[in-house]
Image 1 (cartoon, rainbow, N blue to C red):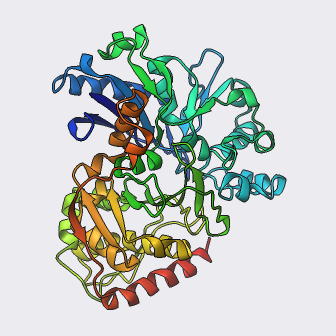
Image 2: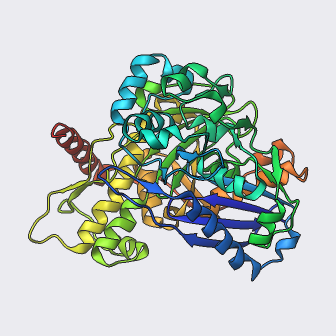
Image 3: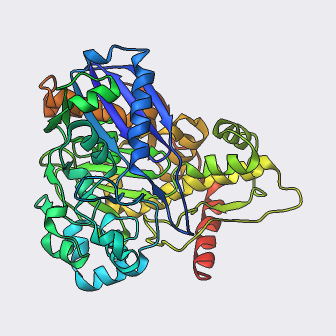
Length: 478
């Protein structure tokens, strides 16, 4: 039995699995802090506390002593800053934090080829510009930095005591030379980062440590269980779907959203803010459009209206038509394909007759329109894909998957356990590290349970055009 741990933004999720099925799951919610506009933070100790709580949940379902290996997955780009005692200096600055816009401009000026080297142009959500921001605005915190980790790797440190990351999570920092799969000294220097602050980089199925006696006492795990490096949530989600080979792709509908296409060749396309990153497995890369807002607007509007996410979707299913308002879902700015950290959300077209159901419909449609924009940014790459798998909590919505199929022109497929994708992918990497699976086995695709085909776009095309015009108009105000 293998354990996958996914350190998400809204929850820590656990999956226990054997070689071909999920046996048990657990989840513990997390809260994000926004002490100033555009800021997004979580304290790393929250992840460890939630990890221990989730393991307590699992202990009531399975025998933790039967776990053979552990894999890690997590939200990418977060800056976890440790002092010389390996304790957090301050809350982690997360992927959807937009404070470091000025530092991105300065980084691009210092490293004009960064898009080709790091696979994408600088944006505030990435790890590197956050450190330059810290030096300028929090010099006391900066002066205490001894090590920098990614979120999942901090939990790894708590489990096994080592400082390590995998290629896919390293890829999301901007410090990685994607083609060479090693840290780039010039980009590190341009963001005031000492090379010895950065962890070792290994493949995702590589064992980087074993559960320590202290971690075992805190969690109930057996000491000595091997822990593999795992991957960023996009890459582990890909592993859960077998998206490790060319012409395989998927969409992820979590707090953030991704459109992911696997490849064996490094293909940077920085001008469209398509991310070209190293995969978590050797000799593999991927292209990805990363949307900061994903399915998050559904839970956001639900919170404003006193509805659950499921209730929002149910209400949205009851209406359609030209009088539904248009919504820009950019609650925290947007990355792909806009590269616009300053844009914010808004409704257009509210009327006296607008209902809660109309508002819910406009929010769900807007998420689909974001995926249409993302697919368009890939150009010819999308033509080789016959279908896209779907994972993440938002993949439970038939309405949303049907809308995405229609506006992208691609069949969308769903499989069992789709809402546990990254954690399941981490468990499969653990099985690979333990020798129970080969790297080639990770390309196996799960059976499809539902399929959503594109419908006639006529009813949505005008609304999608208005959505794009609204962005152009609102972005001119910022």
